[in-house]
Amino acid sequence: MTSYAGLFLSAFLAATVLPFYSEVTLGYLYYADPGAWITLLLIATAGNTLGSAVNAAMGRGLVHFQDRRWFPFKPDQIERAQVQFNRYGIWTLLLAWLPVIGDPLTLIAGTMRVKWLPFFILVFIGKGVRYALVLAVLP
Image 1 (spheres, rainbow, N blue to C red):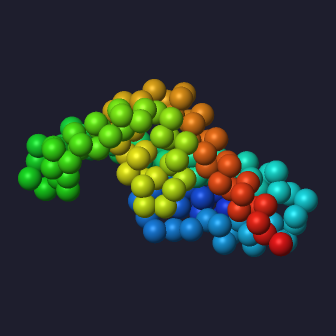
Image 2 (cartoon, helix red, strand yellow):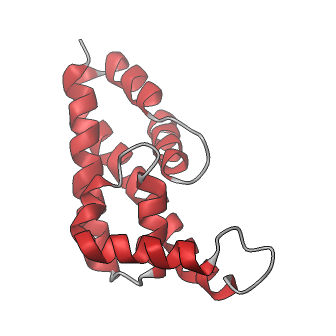
């Protein structure tokens, strides 16, 4: 049970803006018990999806501070990101698993106030496919 909690936590942290990787934990637990692959897949996907939800929630809240001098993004940067997000739509959330662009994508989804149900469904699917592929390539 502790190992599952560790997997959930590593997947959660990997989806936030913190530099963290959950694939190593997933692989280690898979090698320890290959028969638990479905459980591992679901736990890693759930943790990673909830971590992305934290990014979206931060996007919803942080946008209120965009006029402050200390705010890290300029209003025109946020607007450009929102225009790009609108161009491709919420389906881009299927790509939230991608390195470098996945975290900002979920943050922008938050600023755009994407409804939570489609957010969770699309992010869960994308991240689930990624973890399934990781498990599939393990020898």
